[in-house]
Amino acid sequence: MLNPLPASKWNYTTAAHLCNRAGFGDTPEQIKKLARMNPQEAVGSFVDYSEIPDTTPALAWAKPDPDRVERYQEIQRMAREEKNSTQTEDQKREVSEKRLKMVRELQRTQAMHIEQMRADWLKRMASGPRPLQEKLTLFWHGHFATSALKVQDAYFMWLQIDTFRQKGSGNWLDLLQAMATDPAMLIWLDQAQSRKEHPNENFARECMELFTLGEGHYTEKDVTEAARAMTGWSLDRPHEEYVYRPRLHDYGVKTVLGTTGNLSGRQVLELIVAQPQAARFITGKLWKFFASENPSPQLIDALAESFRAGGNNFGPFLRTIFSSEEFYADSVMHNQIKSPVQWLVNSVRLLEREMPPPIVATQMTKTLGQDLLAPPNVKGWDGGVSWITTNTLLARYNQAAILVMGQGNLGATGDRPGQKMAAARANEIARQMRPVDVNTIINEEERRDAQAVIAKLEKWFIQGQLTEKHREVLRDYLEPRSELNDQDVRHAIRLLMSTPEYQLT
Image 1 (cartoon, rainbow, N blue to C red):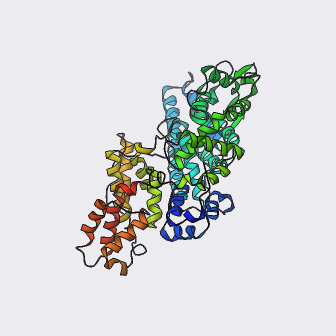
Image 2: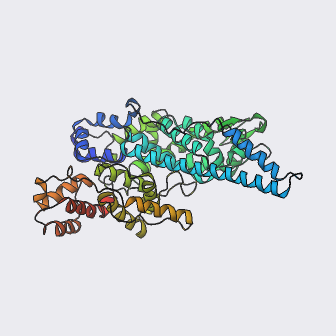
Image 3: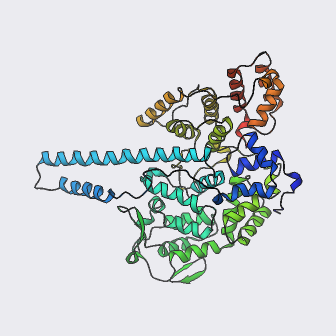
């Protein structure tokens, strides 16, 4: 298994598949350039992204805040004043109002930074020079699912996403250690509260169950003993950094996965990664994300063997799967439901338009079921068929109208007043978006033949063919029109984007 794809099978269709799965898709012109390379060069153009300059500027606030400690100390000082018995009731009320005002301002700033971060990430996916780096970062965000709703610190969330960018194609143990001591993760799974008197088991449990081994490949004793070994990993929240606190660490003897000793947290991670199941688990999950659901046991064995042979490094492993015949099998190609983020970024790239304004773009993915930086739980998003419901499918059709024609309704998410206000504001801005320029997709000469228009749209947007039923819908719309204007072409594109075929990649 995992035989290299023969050069004879490398063509426009396989190049489009690589482009869709290792990135977020692209226009026919870019796919043609990829198809003119040999398979190794094409795969390398995605996997070797560290060689591609990335001049994307960092967000201005994405750095430690030197005034943070002073602000927190001021809030704590005012909280003490509120309880001071020597203060009059009026004085206490005045201090309380000042403290609440400062807290609310901090909360508004954090919320604004999270929205900026979502928008910046979507823009990187749509127009950045390293599509696989962002696609892999999206995978790790779903794998180590961490929500800003609990972390409540935009810098910590940015730091975690940046760690995925920098280490996502590197060594498995290095990435796992980085996540174990990541400030956002320390808050998300309560590891920062763990101490030898009361070890917190949340991270130890999820590390084995969700991150590395899967259910049935560890015992409850392994979890409790690993939690003891991980005590001491803590957080200096005012200074926004991980800190190891030796006085909180349990130096006693522990037994984890059959090994006994005065184990440290790092040694536990080493024991976990050394398990044969660890390679099977993570490579199987990567295959499901980049290729297809339900890989056979034989394929999982081959994936794990390749990963181990590459020193547990993700870069060589991804090169292997993107170069393999199995990755381009008929059962894999055009058979994966686009996630909301994939759908939006792919649509923006194919339409050759800018990402919608931040509040519109984030409301789009949220309405479709994928709120970046706020996964639903520690398991992340289920993916696959769960992306498609009656409501989300209708939302995709409405959003296609917004992207193509500047018309449509995003819909509302949530019942709280703030959520309704955000949705209303997003809809207001969406209605001001310009329709897409379709002249680069279908020129004047091509518009004279309805069949040629359909064939061009199929190649552009789905790299394949619609079913006869859906082609007929397009024919019924196009053929009565002797001369297609821009709005006619836009409507035809919107119709195609509303087909089941467009929801697949």
